[in-house]
Structures are given as structure tokens and as C-alpha cells.
Image (tube, rainbow, N blue to C red; front, side, top):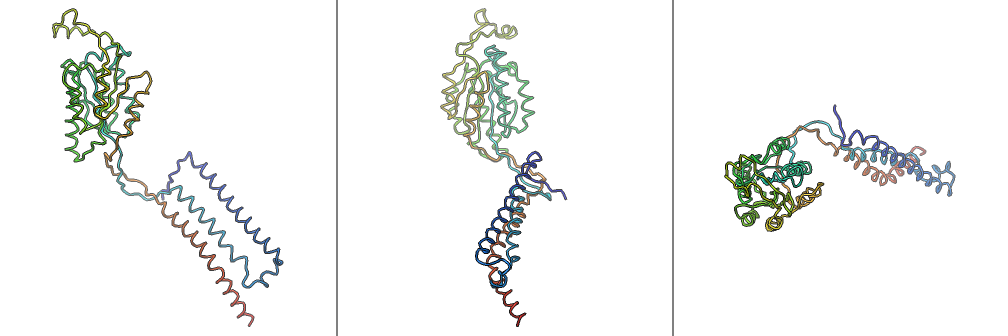
Length: 359
């Protein structure tokens, strides 16, 4: 029979050592208590005379008390070790949030501020967030002048990472930055997911917008206000308020027939608008940082959002049998107390038996 314990193999030596020390200390404590009791008795009468002077006296009557204490302690240690044997199907629920990442793929995300590009740094930040939230469902929406769902809400983070790495500023054909369209697409994704799952989880829905904030069309603040009924919105700003020069590629210059003055422009991080966008929808704003302090801040904010059971899985697991040793420990300790109560009756019985023998 396969028996396993909750204690890992690395922790087993420490646990066994502590258990042995505890048992030895208990044994020594019981011996000390017994010797002290005998010393008090010897102060009154000689130990060899005790059976004749004290009615029903016998040292053997007290021995079960020590054994019951030791056995109860051993059973209690096994309870903490949580022995497992036998297998059954177990329903396992995972606590998670639904997180939709809205990633800006407009041409301004090619600006080398910060290096190597804004889009590359944005991908790195999303990757870091995935590492910090392994139990959450993630979805991905790319947006520029339009918005499209690249990855629906999923727990398959490897698939998510592979799809994230394919996102470029050429993923969508319409140029511009329409955060409003991205928020509308996020609402559509949440609505479809609710219809499929039959679950409503406003408190566990999160939208994270990763953008440089150069809104070129739409009313993002009005749309963000509508998102209060769907999700909490957080914003991660990519770029610098001072701006960086962006040059449109040759094919775009030919396609849009830009003048010489329009072929380049300065792209600035619109922090004022992004902060208002986040706070008006009940979320928070953070600007990109060289380390992961920005992502950790977002992660701490996400902890305030309620989680829900997003997936139920049936697993064939070993059954935790901790109740068996726990029951044995309770039996031993209760039997010890019962034995103390019965000891006067046992002494009286021994006395009557010896009296009948002598009669």
C-alpha cells in the first residue's frame, strides 16, 4: 500500500528529529514526575511497606497512564504529518481573476524611449505580470486605430506568451490610438465569457491598459466610466512626458501621402489623461520603471480585487487520512483521563479480591 505524507522529503529529517526530541522529553518528564511522587511517598513510609500499609496499592496500576500519554503523542505527530493512502477523484477549484491586457500597437510604440522600443518594454512588463499572477486567467487585446482580441481569456499562459511575442505595430492595419475602441472590445469579451460560463464576476474582472496615451480618436474617459459595471481599469504608461521622435515607415508615408513635416512627429506620454482614465474607473496608474516596481505596484493593487473560483477540475488524488491518527490520539488522551477515574475502583477491587483470598 502506497502511503505518503504532507511533509516533503527535504523536511522529513527535521520533522523526525523534532518528533524524537519531543518524545524523549515527554518520557523524561514522566519519569521525573514518577520519581518525585515516589520520593514524596518515601518521605512517609518505606516503599517496601507501601503495599501492606496502603489499601490496594500497586505501582503497576499507574503504568498505563505513561503508555497512553506516549501513544497519544505519537498519534498526534502522525496527524500533523497528514498520512495519505487510497485514491479518489477530488474536485479542485482554482481561485483566479480575469485580466484583460489592452496593448497599444500604434506606430508611436516603436519610439526608442525607453529602449529598445516602447512596445518591446511593454511586452516585457506583461511577461513579468504573468509570472506574478500564475493562477489568473489572461486575455489580450491589441489596439491602434481599431481593436482586436488576440487571445481570449485563458489559463494557458504558455500559449499567451507565444501570442504576445508575435504582436507588432503592424498587427492591426488602421493607424492611430483609439483607447475607446479597446475598452468596447474588452466589454464585448467579458459579455461573451459571461454567456459561455454563466458566471458574473464584476469584482474579479480587471482591465490593464498598456499605452503611451496618445489618444487620437474616441472619448476614452466616457468609455472608462461605463467600464465600472464590468471591470476595474488599471493603466501602465509607457514612454516619457518629454516625448520622443517617431518616424513613420516608408510604406505608410506612401500610403497616407504625408508631407515632409508630417513624416516625423514627437510622441509624448499623456500622463494627465491616463491618470484620470484609471482613477475615474476605480483603478490606479503607474508609469513604467527600469525595474519591476511598476508591475509589483499593479500586482499589489490587483490583490485588492476579489478572486473567484474560475475553474473546477477533477483530480485523482491520495486521500488525506489525518482523521485516523487524530481519532487515535483523542482516544488515548480520553482513556488516560478515564483510567485516572477508574484507579480508585481498581484499588478497591484488588483489596476485595485479596480480602476474599485471605478469608
